[in-house]
Amino acid sequence: MLKVKHRQEQGGERFDLPTFCSDLSQSTDIKSACMLIEDQLQSMGYNLLSVKFCDTLDEKPAVRPFSRYPKAISELSAALRAQGGCPISKEVLTRLSPFDAKTIEMVNYSGFLDARFLQELAKMEHQHIAVIPIIFGRGLAVYTVGMKGHRFVDGTREEIVNFVCNANAVLLCTFPEIATLFEPKKLTLLEAQIVSLFGNGNSLSEISTTTGLSDITVNMILNLAAEKLGARNQAHLLTRALATGEILNMQSG
Image 1 (tube, rainbow, N blue to C red):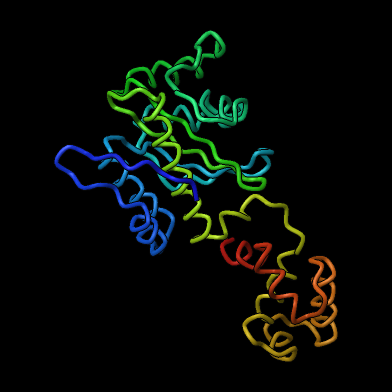
Image 2: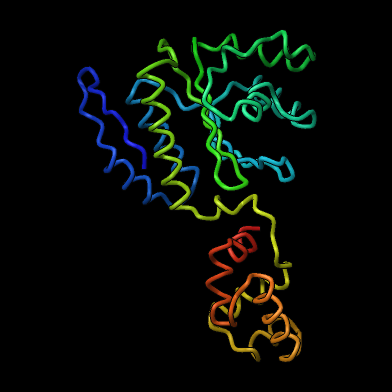
């Protein structure tokens, strides 16, 4: 993980990154994990505004487990999705590096909804809004952080970026399904179901009863799935299916 500089807050205790990461890894779901990140940022003097996981190729819908944006901005963002996203989303895919959302040039977004979005953004109490994109495989995590009276430069920029990168790394380790959420799938739903049943200790006969397929067909599907995932045999198939997220994605779907 990246190294975070710890800052002594007035009347507060020094931020303990290992303890925070340990607490974050105990989260039972992504939303509660995002709320822990929100609490920590607030103690540092900032506000977490949103967390989004999206597809860099824009072929799958984004996942938004957390948002604190005003209703007007959220509604405009939703309306702009059919047009390739709001100005922040478009800037993220163009820059792929941290930036201040309040520095987006309105002249580059002349569309009516784009202009309305930027106008609403300008009304927010935060003079600066940090936008931090993090690429993981084909996926892209985007965090936006309200800076209140702080500027997103120099040491402050380094502090927030490093903290968010550490938090995102813990999220990916705690919820590995995020890491494979936008990867192209190799198994069909039926293949993934049968591999999952097999991985849970079901025999060919039991899988056959559950799916209504013959033992021969079940065995053929397992061998085909192993070939697709590059597994050496059916025993190795489960390991490969878990590592590539095929089973996790089937279950979450």
